[in-house]
Length: 137
Image 1: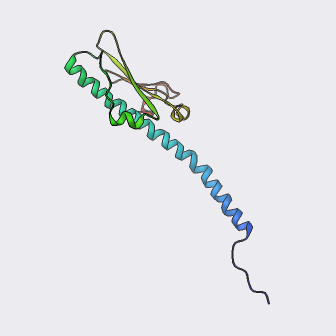
Image 2 (image 1 turned 90 degrees about the vertical axis):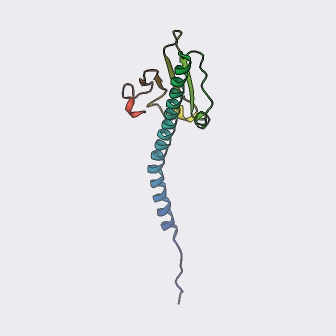
Image 3 (image 1 turned 180 degrees about the vertical axis):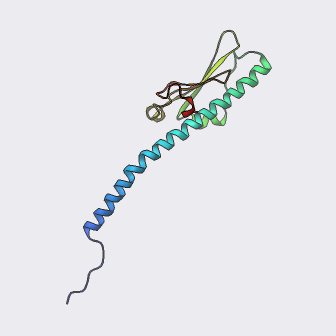
């Protein structure tokens, strides 16, 4: 008499590998999408923190020109994915802050691209979202 063997057959193992492959192919793009959105939110949040700094600067100096953005924790945290910069107009009454994606964020976030906000709080994006700013902020 033959004793019964215990274990997995090669077919069973291949079915499990196929199922894992299918689940990974569905889950990975969703994961990447969430990572891109989380980094975008971090960049936008940091930019808004810098906008608050600019308003405090204007309150004390009565102009935006000459301000230098502080190197806060948020700037350091988003440095791998966004560059935060600003430009003030020569009349000293307005500014524009911009969060420009860089590295992997730039190639994966074509929907929103560069995020910007001005002294009036008007938000804008340069990506394919165009005028639908709510998708990006």
